[in-house]
Amino acid sequence: MDTILVVEDEPVLLETLEYNLKREGYRVVTAADGWQAVEVARRERPDLVILDVMLPGIDGFEVCRILRRETTVPILMLTARTDEVDKVVGLEVGADDYVTKPFSMRELLARVRALLRRERMLREELATERAERWERLAFGDLIIDTASRRVYLRGEEVSLKPKEYDLLLFLARHRGMVLSRDLILERVWGWDFIGGSRTVDVHIRWLREKLEDDPANPIRIVTVRGIGYRFEG
Image (cartoon, rainbow, N blue to C red; front, side, top):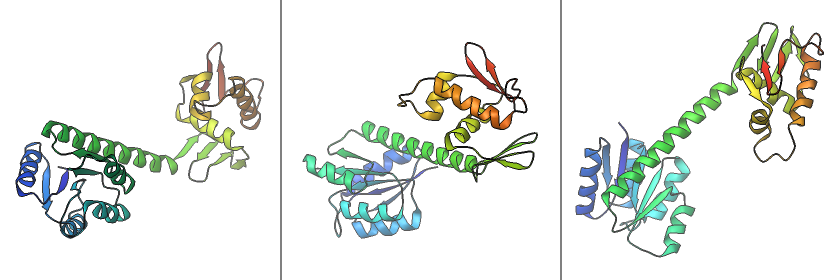
């Protein structure tokens, strides 16, 4: 159950937000002024903050600045103002989104769901990235150590250029799959790379010279005629 901190000094709106969010299945904690918001956020560690701009004590912009220095929690700001400057300031101090009063509850709930979904995706991507960073791939006598970006063949380190390593790692993570030159180019060099698929062929040749016993008759990185390459290990 995601926890949402609602910071709002208007009692009726605070109660309305709390009711609707609880009905959607969220755990809700509240605060009615700026300093209380900071205290509750530090204590409860919410998954999302709905933060009004106009608050007693310190305003929402300052609360946002404080929270952003301490956490990456998504912050959705509420403002009664229509001045574009206020919206820009909110985003500049670290807010992820904003809603201008009066707003529809359906819109606010949709933005809440979108922010929480994005945060979950970012956490999953970060977890995957960390796992891959410490990944150790072994294919018989060929070892790829992603933590150190080093490759070993029969116990001896193989000296690879950065792009050679990136290419080998991409191939190895898709062992047994036929990968087109265009796909390899996009994933390893990036979609905005201006070179052609010949770049892939050249780097494959360099890898074969370093990893294959007989580069002219490769068994680790094989050519799939008319398509691309397949890594066999």
